[in-house]
Length: 542
Image 1 (tube, one colour):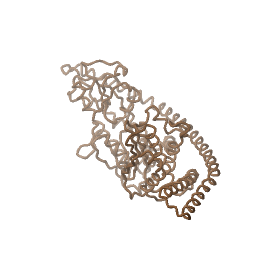
Image 2 (cartoon, rainbow, N blue to C red):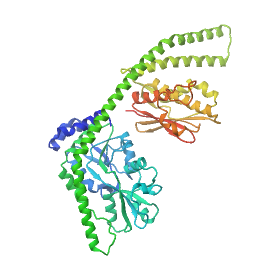
Image 3 (cartoon, rainbow, N blue to C red):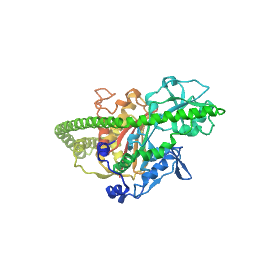
Image 4 (spheres, rainbow, N blue to C red):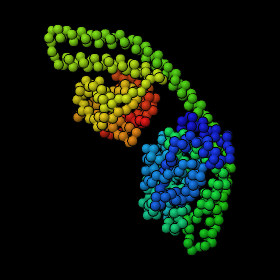
């Protein structure tokens, strides 16, 4: 989450007041004038919390969304999706402005900001009562445990217990069916949704084996580029009275547990009473810890902010040092490059005077001239990269890629590399074409080096463009067998190289990633495989 957004959320509680729709409308009237609606995606199959039926939202969360709607002068519009995974994809593509009942995870922070949670639920492991009886998560190592695809608990379980064999299921009901049939050993699920599914009596032989140590803290997820909407929803969530939340969600806490013995009314009543007492104790216990937890979270945010400031200062000092170094390089290189270009002119003139016409010599002279021009332009580009006042310009993406191929033409042809381009030749972008050209040259050169080192037969480099609305992905893929997984996390670090000091200094990918993040507000990532490595350049265009 950006520093400015975290700062806003940190201090909102300090200015608490009685929340009314009129105050919200007045405080954010400039925002509401420009917005016609707020689009929302939900989990379409997560009863009793939320679901889609006949194009409408149902479930307990519907009542809370109605409460939020009373504070907004514009409608919340529901975007239909087939499943939770599609809802996440729509959020990435910004087809929906918000997600409801979503938990913060590291992967989701790449495209969403998050409000405070307004509902917290425990997670459990459900197993068959005739199967093994695990006492802890360590007993599940090597077992097949179901988890709903792309749920937050799937990411948490993979990070903390990689030894557990997680099996993705489409929804919690289907997961319970697979446990019942013995296809999987257990299921990770929320206690409330499990209680809802067990009420039908269809799963008599299933029971709760383990309560997981992680609470599901659910709030709104808001698209990264709309910090005003984040502030509005955060204000509504944090200022909603606890009595209102209790009225909406509290009645569902008493959902019926699994009835093991359908012939014993006494057993059912006792278990129901014990469960109600236990949930009552847990509910008040978590309420008593809420203030302390918020204080700890605030302290952690402030510590994180301080560390981020230190990182920014270090980065700025590093850029200043780099600027001095580039100026020194420019001073040392300008004269030799000018002399090389002058020598090319003399050679070309003498050839003309002596009526010598050699196509290969002419081509090589042109290549030398292009390379010296590129080297000179590279110095200007790096110097301009540090200039905050540099101007964007329109340029043709295909022509920029073709220019990078021309610059590296000699080395590519010496390795007999087949370049395959799959992109629209008419796409026009706005930005800094020479900086993007430098990235293309680096990726082509790195691919050529990998192919040359590994002596690949029939070598190819494929350049592919994928576009979803204003989101662009440019793939540079080779067939050199991929990158060693043990060094994947290091390849974008400065001064890390697999070529040795004679062939590289390990700055190409580092500088390329920095250019994408600073100049294009995008990124470069590695997509590795046994066939070859793909470096993916991704960015938005307004």
